[in-house]
Length: 391
Ligand SMILES: *Cc1c(COP(=O)(O)O)cnc(C)c1O
View 1 (tube, rainbow, N blue to C red):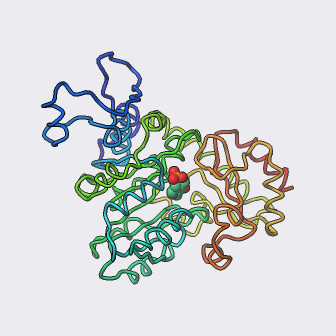
View 2 (view 1 turned 135 degrees about the vertical axis):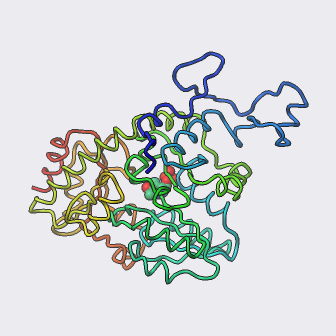
View 3 (view 1 turned 90 degrees about the vertical axis):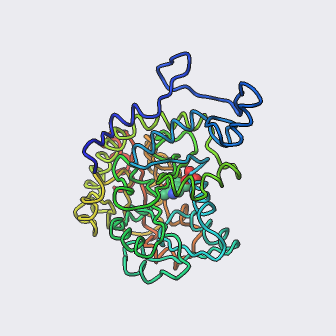
């Protein structure tokens, strides 16, 4: 890590370009296009001879501010913001790959990512092989002459399994494969994959970057060469899954409190995980901040905290899990995560309900599993809320 890297200050001060009004807080530029001084300037802008805004599908000052700030926090040269996390993944694949190329992805990636890679990219001649997340040898063995990309989430949803990003990046580099890390669960406040050797970082800004469950957004961070020259920006400005100025403004302001929120929510999650682990009605807790986590040593090395997602298995099956979920009065029963409000889900019948029983089993998702995205309520309130069902 660069000694001069000052996350706290970068989160507050990067990406500020004041207008003629000299506003203190970052302005929200709700405009679809920009006025040129004359025909010559219009021609120069369109002809790429003069930098500047043309149309908000290409660039927008509020979106640019968000991109600059997130790039700084991830330690990347550049960032491209997108309409959602899924459009960040779509733009990365469409921008960098072509028919005949091959992707290796971890078996435990986000449900829509699996659908995108298998059912949509598969129709365009891009094939994906899925491997167990933490098994570095399996990644190596899955490489073919046409493999162009590794795609991974760490920690994975909902099992909190990790992969050693630095070790995987060595495998990727040796095979000239682009390593893409979805950093949604940790955010740059807890983990910075680019510094560990990843080529690109993906975000669903919908989660912790907004942080209060208001808007959809996404982003890709990495080298200027991959993002700008490699085809991703070209895809985005042509196809149009661009982040709206309003959503960019919400996420830009969200970045200012990101580290405070991640630290406070992780602290809550740690306390809740420790409490759950001691509870007799809980069979197992999955949380990278617990010494019982099978990759605890890696978690301590790779992340500065355990994060704010806690998963656990209750003694019994689906009926017990549903009963505990239904007994909550504070925690919201909703699929979203990363909010200051705690949320609770039953992965086997919601986020992972569409995959087969065998696939669920392979992914380690049982009928008694519950996932909590821990927010900023008091730990005491969360414990009481869960104790009602746990007994
Ligand atoms: C939510 C999520 C996505 C998709 O993001 P959207 O903003 O919902 O499109 C991708 N990856 C992970 C890990 C997520 O949690």
